[in-house]
Length: 451
Image (cartoon, rainbow, N blue to C red; front, side):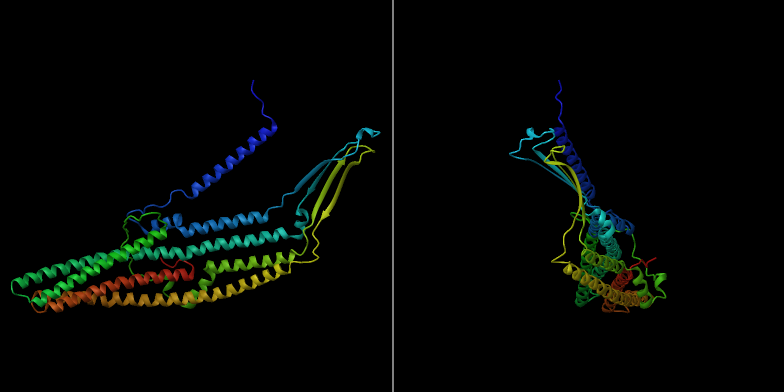
């Protein structure tokens, strides 16, 4: 015959089962939040894939998402109603014999039950809960805007770093080509020296040029490796970084339509409307105002409604007939009325106002600095593409032709080749500075400006 489970045993089993379910759900949520960490980067990698990986695995965005979730939990806690409190007690009256009670309704066992609403009813009238929820809602909005501000800062950083990797890769290819040309020149001069057509000084110059080209190639390889490591860190790679390549060619120089007629003043106006960190600071001011109002409202005592039932026996002869009572419970604000909390809340509100003013000034400075860098980088790239690159290439080609015909010395050829390599390397640097300045300008304005 099966053994029947009593109610206390069933209750224990039920609670244990619910605990196991809760633990299982929490573990599942933890596993899902930490699932599929980024171990490798696709090869080849595009800018769109890099941005997607950043949004899915970037450490700073993950932390910002958790901050938003935490603020959402604070809002739920602040908006929740207090649970009512139920309490009870029982006892025994000694040296009392209920058998001598004439109507038989007496008892030596006493009990009472109390119920308190924890101030919920009157709190709805006073509005403390509403103010607490308002403070938490402002904090949640500030957390969301802070998350948007993290994107404002980091998305341009990902674009900038990706472009730097692309340009570093192109610079490395060019450095290898220059090293190959220098190596071929050194071999040619060595052959000429063996035949008596070149001097030992010419061989030394060619060897120095070859070693200088190889040194430049090593430096370019180092810059590319550093750029890839920085990009992988932004994308949230866990563990060793495998080598990867980018599919995009160096981005051509183009001025976005939004910046062709822009000025620092017009961009400053856009920034004041689009910067999420400024909006987050304003949300914090709203939260500080609600916190100040709440601190002032706290001077009103928390009044609780209390219901009580007690009994010891029944009938006219009972020590305590069945009795129900209703009342109020409140602390008396005799010694302290929350002056410290009010002063602190007012100081916090003033600090938040000053923080908004400071950040507004900082936004203007950020835009002015970023726009100046953008204008300078644009001017350098335009100068490079309009005159310097073509002139350096043409000078190198003309001197190379004259050198092959014997009309120019090896020194002149190596100097022209060195100038061309330097100019081309500077062009990649200027192009990288331009796209970096454009990304910094997007960060300063708080909106996308690139086509």
